[in-house]
Length: 260
Ligand code: GLP
Image 1 (cartoon, rainbow, N blue to C red):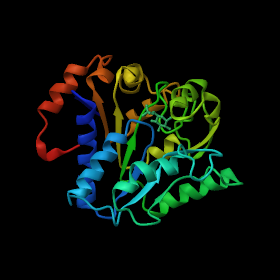
Image 2 (cartoon, helix red, strand yellow):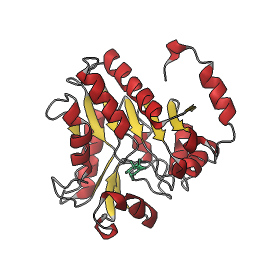
Image 3 (spheres, rainbow, N blue to C red):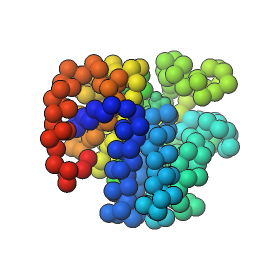
């Protein structure tokens, strides 16, 4: 696990965007794992501006969402499929059916989850997965207690996650209780995981993820078992890391050719 501490959230977004662009330049048909929430929004803005500048095309790339609310109708502004259309696809050039998410409106949700797993596998797996982290240590919607080898399935949100996400809805009661989410085992099969965290509200979760025990109590701690993880944080999110000086020294001395 590499921890990169940067002064600002904008620099975090630029570094993550550079990793995505580098991948797509090397591999035009790359498979990207797309996160929602506020953490990746800066990355998506950067990708749009790099696309506008002619530096990258997503015309052959594919995308898979991490998760989805159950029951939010098509066109609802907080349905994650709509969020990704608005925040990413509208600014770049993915093909018409290139981005898919788990179907939170399916009559048979377990079958929709299995279909989604099969679609990821059929695409050859995810090359680079963007991730945020919830204040309770969740990634995607894998709440504390999630099996560390779980697959895409239905989960129930914690009260804390519903409260955290209420800012996106007109009232807290509108936040759905149920979601579909890639499992921790699903996420762990992506070849490169890039987790972004900014602001003081993420500091405790980042500490538990990076320096705490591997435990379902902090689902993000499962990233310690993955061979290629980049944790990109600003100073505020890094402030509880006891090895922060070491992470800074290691990154400062890293040869440029290595990339993330
Ligand atoms: C939601 C999403 C997660 C995201 C988390 C943190 O629960 N399902 O993928 O990482 O929120 O969101 P934010 O980046 O807005 O803090």
